[in-house]
Image (cartoon, rainbow, N blue to C red; front, side):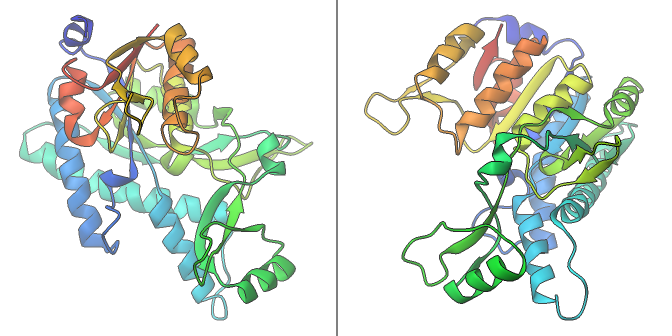
Amino acid sequence: MTGKASNESQSSKHIVIALGGNAILKSHQRGIAEEQLENIRITCEQILDMIANGHNIIITHGNGPQVGNLLIQQEGAHSKVPAMPMDICGAMSQGQIGYMLEQVLHNLLQAKGINRDVLTVVTQVMVNSDDPAFRNPTKPVGPFYDAETKERYEREKNYIIKDVKPGNHRPFRRVVPSPNPLRILEAKALKRLVDAGIIIIASGGGGIPVAMDSKGNYHGVEAVIDKDLAGEKLAEAVIADLLLILTDVEKVFLNFGTPKQRALDLVRLEKAKAYQREGHFSPGSMGPKVEACLRFLEFGGERAIITSLDKASSALEGKTGTHFIP
């Protein structure tokens, strides 16, 4: 590790922080509000240190469990109230998680005597309606189904449902496209807010995917955008200096899960691209995170870091994590 990351942490930076799912809800938890608020408190304590050091923080986050629960609730109550489409559920989850982050962070800032405004922006992300992902949906959403429900929903709702858990008595799940994010519709407003010193929470869950029709009007689409790739678009929108992706591992590995496994510390852009071409980063886990880092550097970002939530401050000081540089 070079000394550059440590030096950078001494001056004010615009930092986009992409929170992984474990920042809000652990895999073994029920998902009640109290659990999520406690997880968010622990997460925000890490972020508080960065704010206290003078950095301008922009937060984005996942929403998988929350929007999944909304979809389950919608199906369970469909005979009593109309179900909402996925884009509306995405907006609901942005408001839910943003509210919790806002409240917890405000209370922590107040206790530390820091006077900063915190604001959630319900964020739309433009996608191309001709994106190849729409021809090959792969992202599982919502509840698991048995064979009878699968056939009925395919017939009545035109769902695309795949066997994602072979051998289980309810192995089927709806899948939707995961298109590439093109740009954030609220980009200019977000930039003005960040420049005004407001702590922003935006593009939650990858943002609400929208496409444009032939008349130039936007409409929501049934899809899920990868949150890290959307987080990179957020970093572009606010002209961030650093992109910090927080997940459940301290570093990125080559040959992960094999006897040749090796952690990466400092990686230059072209070398990271070579590792990517060699297939070191799984499409279902680390692949999108590394891709987001590389896109950010190509846009002109100073540095992108992948590390675990509990190592965020140390990684920002250059002591741990995997650092990607131009």
